[in-house]
Image 1 (cartoon, one colour):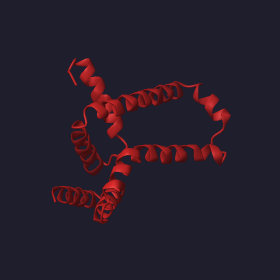
Image 2 (tube, rainbow, N blue to C red):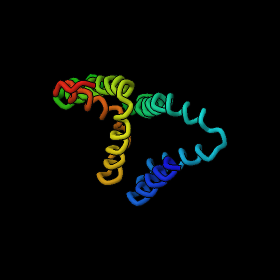
Image 3 (cartoon, rainbow, N blue to C red):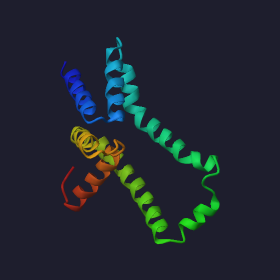
Image 4 (cartoon, rainbow, N blue to C red):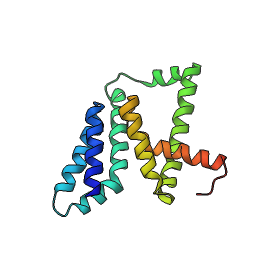
Length: 151
């Protein structure tokens, strides 16, 4: 019963904050929970959902290449400016942080609650996008490493 109330609370906050993605996410999870014997579905989505999401994002990112909006010349031009080099560096950094984040979540699953809560706050109140829990966990992992905190 507690998980229902928690998710309904998240749905209410998402509606109040007018965050379409979080509204859909909370509603879909509530609908899945309403299906009898939905535990297997929930476990599958929990296990594979991030990979599915990354795949969908990757597809969306590759569409401008498929449509010809971005070509090799654009890639070459990216390396001709400091902005391009910074973007490449940030792309590398985020991918490394994401990998560290996945590893961190595997050994410290209790952190997930705080990361999800922080993500919800950022999405609803700061108009952020809920793509950050893995990156956030990677940043948290790096900060903990720097501060020499045992995990």
